[in-house]
Image (cartoon, rainbow, N blue to C red; front, side, top):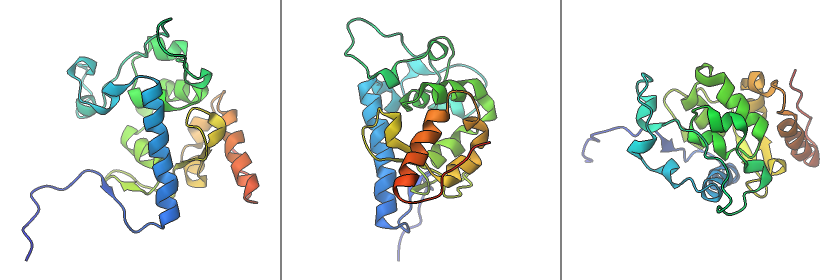
Amino acid sequence: MTAPVAYQPVVHLSLQLPNWLILTQLNVWQATLINSLILGMSHFFTDDENNHDNDDEEEDSAYLPRYLSPPLSRNSSPLPPSLHPTSLQQRTPHYPWIDLFPHAGMRDTLIRVGSRLDVHDFCADMLGSMFSHPSSNQTGSGFMVWGESWLVESWEMSEGFVRKYAWLLEDEGCEDMIRATNRWRERRGEELLVVC
């Protein structure tokens, strides 16, 4: 007989997925970790009180702090151009995970949409069905990363992600993400995705 569990985890690993799917989704996790290391964002994985915003965003501000992207300094190691912070990132408080995308247009779009985006759903959808979150309505959404984490050309969006977040991708500047996705789909002989 097993002892009752005192708590339920908010996020847990789904073991019902095929191995290849878990590996592709682990690549996304690895890509975000690599990009965070390149950006020197060790605070992203800790609960640093100095990064908390004292706004009224209930539970979000408890573990999803907002901050301003630091400007590039002459002393810092060179960043890949795709990870350079935009002026919007530097002047608008936002979630640190936004900086991990290797696409300036997508980062700016995510900052501009603000509270219209369900942050929990989006983060869960980023990893597809590898992790489940109670509020997530996953529909095969997710990203795959097939190369260097800092190159937009390495990233592919799933059909479910494009369908669910088409309203984000219609914003000017996200064409490169769609082009990169279609390049990977074309290599596999799959139908190209169109965002209208």
